Amino acid sequence: MSEERHNWTQEEILEVYNKPMMELLYEAATVHRQYHDPNTVQVSTLLSIKTGGCPEDCGYCPQAARYHTDIEGNDLMTVPHVKAQALRAKASGSSRVCMGAAWRNVKDGPEFDQVLEMVRTINKLDMEVCCTLGMITENQAQRLAEAGLYAYNHNLDTSEDYYKDVISTRAFEDRLETIDNVRKSNVTVCSGGIIGMGEKVEDRAGMLVALATLNPQPESVPINALVAVEGTPMADLDPIPIWDMIRMVATTRIVMPKTQVRLSAGRTEMSREGQAMCFFAGANSIFAGDKLLTTPNPDVNEDMEMFKLLGLNPQKPFIKVAQPETVEAKDSKYESLGEKPKWTRPGHTIERNEVAKEQAKLTD
Ligand code: SAM
Ligand code: DTB
Ligand code: SF4
Image 1 (cartoon, rainbow, N blue to C red):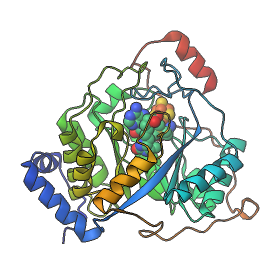
Image 2 (cartoon, rainbow, N blue to C red):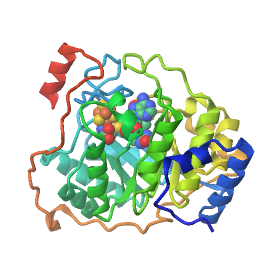
Image 3 (cartoon, rainbow, N blue to C red):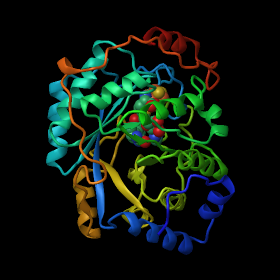
């Protein structure tokens, strides 16, 4: 039985990543079967509850205000709108809803209260609720837990070394601190990253070291292939070969045997055969629906055809961790602390654009 190990080194992970493909696949599939049903894949749905206008400078992201992308920004969605979307997702086989907001960090106040109500509403539909709202404090994590949040997504995105070349408006340690704040609550941790941003194989291994050495390891690790969006600094990067995705998924599965490995962004560029190899290598979740947060995703019907072809069944909710209880707002034992964010703000160095930078400051 492959055990959860917390002392993985970069050299060891590179050795796994670089194994001959057939060895790697066999080992990953073997580990996968020890902890997961190989014929079950979770279907999750993304909901962008607040789109665009983000003050951060993540070089891959179409939602950063400073880059000139043509996404349509929106104010925070209403609770009934979110409920309607969640019901649609459930009807099409989804067992998890992940709500994303283009925020640097959560601020206490009416908007956060509205998000807490969204969490309560979706948990009552008996779906796993995940949020990805940027950096959060321990008090905010506790309040989300109390509302019934199942998971919080906060990606490390890449290795600590390469991080500065991708994002300069916050530090890698800030991400670790948020993950630690989530860990102190009952909410499960979802953290992964992106490949295809010009990083070296060593950076992919470095990111996996940072995730695998967390104790406990994240319950969920999304592996995204960069969706290169016009207007972002990474617009001209070439798509990664499918073999890199397969290697990354297999390595993630081997070093984090119990985690839910999510084959996330980039599936529109992948063939069915490529995706099937990823499932064989240990991926056990996809995001379904024709949109991720702002970029295209395969059509749901095509995904369901793929499931049929491969004999895959959608995973039911709460098979890994019990459903959290929801406490109503009026019974909450936590106060909104109105905390002033204490996150670091290193200088912005990714791409100078003074006009957009001033606008971003106004929305911060
Ligand atoms: N603002 C919050 C944050 O950054 O934590 C939450 C939303 S953010 C869009 C969630 C994740 O989406 C990022 O951490 C990144 O890993 C992924 N992502 C964003 N743009 C992407 C792209 N173009 N290609 C692949 N993944 C992307
Ligand atoms: C994750 O790692 N990938 C998802 C989810 N977590 C929030 C988001 C992918 C976003 C891709 C770019 C977009 O659609 O804007
Ligand atoms: Fe995009 Fe999130 Fe970075 Fe904002 S913080 S630019 S939404 S990835």
